[in-house]
Length: 320
Image 1: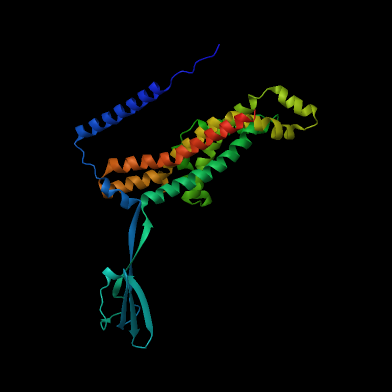
Image 2 (image 1 turned 90 degrees about the vertical axis):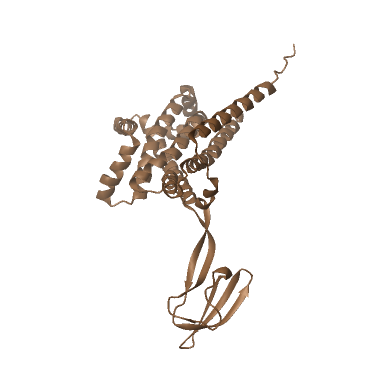
C-alpha cells in the first residue's frame, strides 16, 4: 500500500500567520509606549567618517594649491626653504594661496571611514568567544577523560574542579580571577576574562564529553582492545569519534551560551558588544534601537554557529 505524503503547506501558512501576529503585537505594544523611533541615529555607531586634522609643522607660506576632485594638495614653504606637502578634503580647506601660517595651524582635515563602537564591541565579543571556546574545549576534553580515569587522584581532582565551577556563578569567578588571581600574578583584564570563561566552559564541556563517552557501548572498547589497540588508542580511534557525533548538539549549545556569557566580562572594564551598546545608549538616547541592534549582532554570531553545527551533525550521521 502506497503511503500518501501529508500536505505541509497549511502548516507553513500557519507559521507565517503566527509571526505576523507577533509582529503586530510588538507594534501595538510600542505604540502604547508613545516611543519615537530614531533609526537614523544608528548607522553612525557601526561606521562613520572620522576626521584627522592636518597641521603645519612650522611657520610657512602657501606657495601652491592644487584641487583634484574632492581633495586639495597644499604646498607650504618654510623660512628655511623646506617644503611641506599636505593633502586635505577640498571642502575643509582653510587657507588660500599666498597665506602665511604659523606652526600648528590647521590646514584642513582628512576624512576616512572608521569602525564605530558597535563594530568594535562585536569584534571583541567574537575573539573572546573564539579563544575561550578553543581553550574551553581543550580543558573540557582533558577533564572529561580524567573523570573516566582509573587513577583516583585524577578522577577526584577533575570532579572537584567540575563541581566547584558549575556550582558557583560565572560573575563571581570573573571577579576572583581579576581582583585576586590577576592582582597576584599581574594579569591583564583580557587574560583574566579569557581564563574565567575558558575554565567555566571547560567544566560544562567535561561533563558533556564524559556523558558522551559513557554512552558508547562497552563492547566497542573491548572490540578495539581485541584487535591489539591499547587503552589510549582505543579511546582516540574508536570511542571518541563515536562519542563526538552524540555530543555535538550539546557542545554547540554550550558554545552559543559562551558567546552570550562574554557580556559578563564588562564588569572588569572589557568593552564587549553589550557594554558598547550601553555606552552608545548614553550618547544616542535611543535605547530600544541600540538594544535591538545588539540582539541582532548576537544572532549574527550564533545563527551561523548553530547552522554549522546542524550541517556537521547531518554529515556525520550519513557516515553511520
